[in-house]
Image (tube, rainbow over all chains, first blue to last red; front, side, top):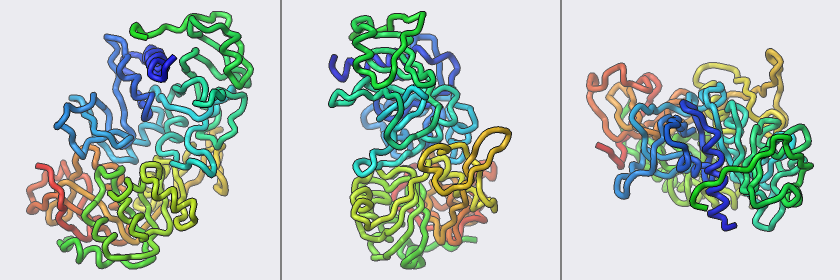
Amino acid sequence: MTDEQKRKIIAHRIAQELSHGDVVNLGIGLPTLVASFIPPGVDVVFQSENGFVGLGPDPAPGKEDPDLVNAGGKPVTILPGGAFFDSALSFAIIRGGHVDVTVLGALEVDAWGNLASWMIPGKMVPGMGGAMDLVVGAKKVIVATSHTTKDGQPKLLEKCRLPLTAVHEVDLVVTELGVFRPGGGTMILLERHPAFSVEQIRELTGAPLEPAPELKDMPLPAAV
Amino acid sequence: MPAILSIPEAVAQIKDGSTVMIGGFMTCGAPTGLIAELARRHVRDLTLITNDTGVQGDGVGMLISADAVTRVIASHIGTNPETGRRMIDGRIHVELVPQGTLAERIRCAGAGLGGVLTPTGVGTIVAQGKQELVVDGRTYLLETPLRADVALIKAWKGDRKGNLVYRRSARNFNPLMAMAADLVIAEVEEIVEVGVLDPDQVMTPGIFVDVMVRSVSRHD
């Protein structure tokens, strides 16, 4: 599987988790791709933590506005019916439980619902930005991540080793191999990529893995 | 009424060792005219309170590259690798604060509150050394106010009474910082006469603003 195929599988599957009317915050990178796969008829409101709701598609070339950027600093648009606010209100929305779903990436995620996503001591310390507030505050936390690192090491662990973003907050983990629910020390496999067996997925997972009794095939995007 | 000064006149009031809040999210809504002048003046030993440190050589990044900063309180420094290098060399001390906590700590200072209780960071290294309180069964961290000597903010329009209007997502931390510093300097794209701004539109009341300067950038 190419990285691009993995990203599409993950983003497509997460898009199925969104319900009509949800307020949704998508992290930078892979989570942003979820917006491209939202099923027809499902209308969600995207929140951008730098200060607005109603985040729209990328601007046409030449139509970029330096005063209108997403949380990654990239030029974006706002849809009719959107609203701007300051950072305190933005995070009141986030911490106050007014965001239905947040989707963000991971360095590590574990079978206790812990997430590590913001630093590797001595190596990479970009900072947490808005991630700690999002993970604590959103009603549903979905982690979007490749199943393993570039070196093939598992990212789904029994216990995170890196400094945490938040404790016991992750509801769902979606990788290119399946959909997982942290279950008190065990990763419950809810859905699997139809080309991979439970055994193959277990070998690539750093936590005890238990298939759910109602284990299903993971729906894949048409073009992969 | 705020004084309307040139950018060099306004920035001349900022001394070595000051704590300076700077609005903006990367370069969006950052007072880049004031930042550039401050970087030129060889001010030293500043403590910055800001969401991020901009990008290398732009926004707040101009101050990092100019050796003006020894301490940073921010939510994210990843967009400016220069800050990370200086942190590893020990030339800049960085305190990383979750973005929502940063906003509330600044708001607290401006609102006369002794702190805020937030669930963000409980069980992480952010909680180290902080008081925890349990309210109705949920654990919170006590986060204390962040105040500054000077706030540098950016607005779209301002009238001669200092009433400010921000544009699009350039609002971000600017209205919060306008409340939380001894000296508030607003870089404004368009300065208008009193009465032009409808009081319903005003986002920062002019009573918070001490100095206004005209911005070099402008949107019509």
